[in-house]
Image (cartoon, rainbow, N blue to C red; front, side, top):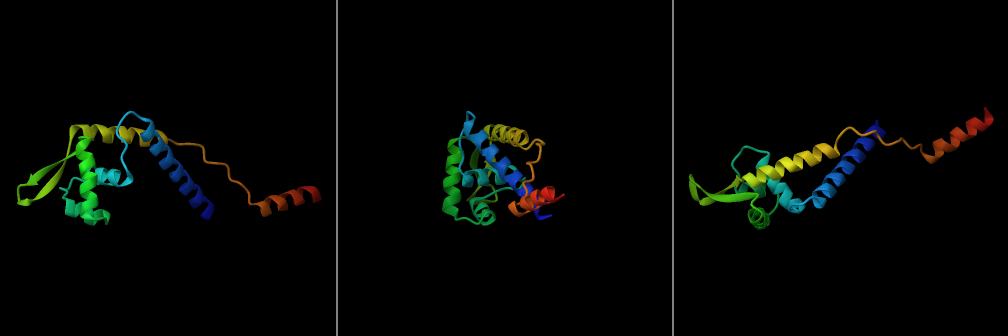
Length: 138
């Protein structure tokens, strides 16, 4: 069971790598891990998001969220609007360009996680030697 779990982990990590490489190669903005986390949190949840709420959810400081949002705003992937319920707070809103970026990202993830043949199971050196010994004896 541990081998299956390790194989699944290896496949997920490889898919993550392939996704990141595809994102870097495509013609579009490169986001840091923090910027991508903020972006995905805002776009994959219907809830209204604030700097304070994002900082708490992602367990990072509010200034770090603000810097990530500044970059997302510069790229037109997110925008800030005053909270009508509390004028001291701002809400993070989606943009059309952000929706397109998410669609592109979903396409990349789908392409990189298509069913692939599982990697061959490699025998441990001890098991390989034991099998060779059995072949010679038998």
